[in-house]
Amino acid sequence: MGRGVRRRIAATGVMALMALTMSACLQDPGASGGSGGGAGLNGYVDNNQSDGDGVVTILGAYGGDEKANFEKSLAPFEKESGIDIQYTEDTDFTTTIKTRVAASDTPDIGFFPQPGGLLELAAQDKIQPIDTFLDYDTIKKTLVPGLLDSVSLNGRVYGAPMRLANKSIVWYPKKAWDAAGYQVPKTLDELYALSDQIKADGVTPWCMAWNADQATGWVGTDWIEQFVLTVAGPDVYNQWTSHEIPFDDPQIVAAFDAFGKIAKGDGTVYGGVKTVVNTQVAESMVPAFRNPPECMLERQGSFEISFLPVAIQDDLDNEVGVFQFPSVAASAEPPPILGGADLAALFNGNDPDAIAVMKFLTSDKFGAEWAQAGGWLSPHRTFDTANYPNQTTKDIAEQATNASAVVFDGSDVMPKEVGSGTFWTGMVDWIQGKSSQDTTSAIEASWPQ
Image 1 (cartoon, rainbow, N blue to C red):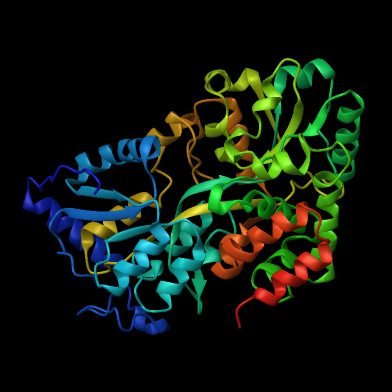
Image 2 (tube, rainbow, N blue to C red; image 1 turned 90 degrees about the horizontal axis):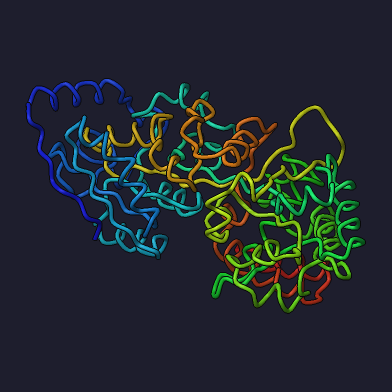
């Protein structure tokens, strides 16, 4: 269980004022077909925990340093509000939250790593629509565009992001890069040409590792999502992830083939297929920092920072360079990015304390302490970037906030049977030699009816 010291409101007038303020934000969810089976006495989704007692429970997957940094970010709010936030970590959050919902034992708030599970429970009337307690228009203006679209069901939104991942980043060892005189590519063809140039200089262009035990293959799905977004554009990408077009649509097969120029190229990926499949994800870029470097480029999300060797993390700005994955054609407009987010959802719509915590967690004021510790990005364009500990992180955040569009990680949106099932295993089959057409057709055949 998460550790939390119970704090009580010192003055009852403070809680009364907070309850009045929060209730003034609430609207009738029934106007848009809101809550059903999970509704409490006032028509809002409820759970079996006490309301207005100064305690708010949260279930999420963060552990270790992430949990510590999250709790640091909560401390000022807890002190000011008098609310005791009790956080519980569970690495199998997706399964646990469903079990707890079935047992009528939900926390006040849950942090969902993927929108699919959140929407599944929203469809069961177990989650409160955010427009009943947040200023929807305001939060939509401050957020990176596109994130709320991923948690929309029947015209309402059921979660709000409290952490962002930018997954459209190419990383490189800065000192070796500068010494070789390489230039940041502006188009996909220039990226291919850069890869050829690095190989001609005697270095394997791409660092790549997909092994994640039972989750092996997820890195490959991110690569494909990047290429679908880049080659086909955001509209086709969203049609693909929502299955408005089949998984094996010709545009998707073309994206697989475009990625194949890198993943299946002769001497293009460090160690070849066997190394890619058997090397742990967190070790992917280790060869880039050897002397001389044994690979030069890696496409990975903003969380790559936590995978880098400690000595590299300690001198990040001098050791690492980043650029945004380029578009097909040169443009003054920044390319779209592949993103991800941890989504906060409210299971207790009757509790003014839980509502106050949700308002804080989903605001641009949350996360300063976590950002300063590293490894966290705010989903808000209005977040104070001075909180980021180095220029590298500021650059990564700027890529997301300035992007022409942000799409949600496709495998997180797709049904679990595909997104964390046949898509993962299909990528392993593909890199080991299966054709793009056969791979995509097999995944299409697995899509649940």
